[in-house]
Image: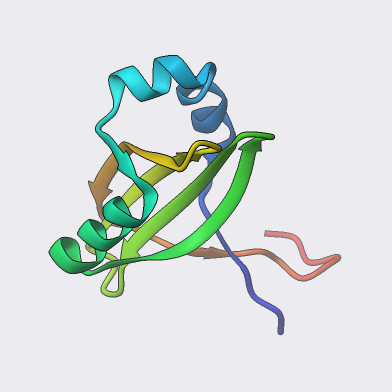
Length: 103
């Protein structure tokens, strides 16, 4: 059975939070993408588990702790700057239903 992890409701969040890269960069803590990734990995033991394009110039990545305790949502801009836009606890992963299966 092919399984995928998804974050329910990410599309509205992405549309609202990332409308205009200048606004997102001004309101969120930002640093070079590798620096932010290293900080999330070493400090919070969070690793990338999901990634998608919010626009042609913005990639959304969800980082999560293996035990589901914490997560972070990061937007990486085309210029290499990554901004932490949300973080929390109680991460729960879902699987997509098989084709024809109803949930």
